[in-house]
Length: 137
Image (cartoon, rainbow, N blue to C red):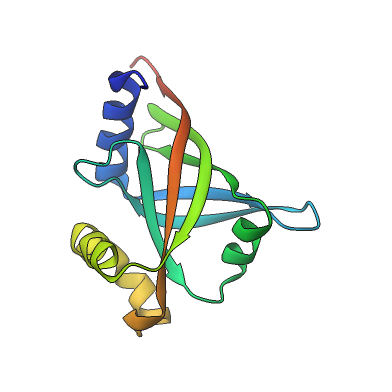
């Protein structure tokens, strides 16, 4: 079991900023980074969740190599969290509804580009390592 302090700090940061940088590795070894809206669900402290459309290139990357990293930062850069873990691609309507409810308006830009919720799939990152750095003011 992981120390609950880094998990709590990560959840507070993710809840406040909602957006993190997801880093994957393409099948050819090329690193790829993307800004993603993410959440941590109540009762699921060891997972990060995000949504994407089926057929996206990031899903190909995850299938080729499920090891990923995430980076989150507060606007002042006083709190930075780095997370590494393993992704699973999930198509579960109940979990998708729960994630959509949690993310709410944070997906506004996403909906403009991808208005069909039926094409969404879940990216679940099983958190294996967390580093949270809080800079002094």
